Image (cartoon, rainbow, N blue to C red):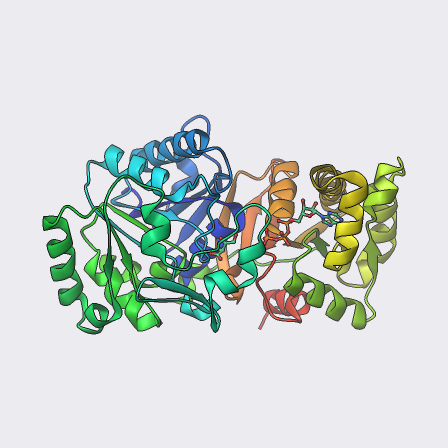
Length: 425
Ligand SMILES: Nc1ncnc2c1ncn2[C@@H]1O[C@H](COP(=O)(O)OP(=O)(O)OP(=O)(O)O)[C@@H](O)[C@H]1O
Ligand SMILES: O=C(O)[C@@H](O)C(=O)CO
């Protein structure tokens, strides 16, 4: 039997976030790192859903479209009955805008003239009302996303934002329709379709809204959303939440955290870890730039402390410190130096017996997973909203438990909570 749902995610930690919500709603999920090169369908054996993680969010439009179509072809080969295009819950898009063109290309390839679009994820404070996206209590355009270096979001009106990214008409399914249940949503979809509307932004302020929407879109070949809509889809295949969907092999081996994230949430989590007095090593980009073997020093430090419990290797710093480094080295160069060093640290930690690894930061996660040669992840139990433990089979055959944390996700004691979750009950 093939998979039920096939998903294409436009970034790495976003893919894990989606997979996590699907698992919580009862699906067994495998996340693939990019499209497998030669078949690779064995990776999807016994999965209900496969999420393919791309790096297409900020790629040039033509590249994002081509990668998404490659992923679609693989998912159809795996038997996917419905396709889910996952983007960020803050609808991150460059001014050129990849969400519209990718969605259009997927619609054309699937031969469908209509789809829905909603980044709502109420559990993480993302809600859509009258087509406007809120982040916590403020409009998207008044949130920190306004100043994002790659994807600044200065308009909260998603009908307008998506409308600027597509030649096709964009409409709205508003909260009053959602309140009427799945039947009312289906009727509104039929109405919009008859008017030639191709995309409907959908309001959702609660998980109940997303469950109603999930039921209503059961027969659409393509849905587009943040990770929130995932909670309403598995039940369309008769699947119910169950802990069995999140089962991973038992975990053992040394524990470590690698943090290359510079976000506010991660800064707090690193501080909380340091406050516990556990061993921690700071990676300084300026020392790497000066030619010092910082990764080697970090590994020597870790080697001396791994037996005592989790070790943290981090480059996480407050925004003003990061800006200072970036002004001396250039932002891209600083990022590349740190990612290279942390990737080497990851390889060295695994060689020293680390089998439970937490990684903080989307770019950092991508660099670490690539360095470790991981091609697929089995998704396990949730640590905090959007972040599950996963199990990966390393190229040498060992199992590595790994958690990939998006910068802004997780509570203040995330690192300790993560390891506690893996302890036998
Ligand atoms: N001290 C530092 N100085 C300069 N750049 C750094 C420093 N520490 C990390 N970086 C770089 O900053 C970038 C952080 O991106 P990353 O995606 O890993 O984390 P994030 O942006 O906080 O999280 P997310 O993208 O998941 O929201 C990486 O390229 C990383 O190498
Ligand atoms: O939807 C989100 O906010 C996250 O899954 C994400 O995409 C992080 O980059």
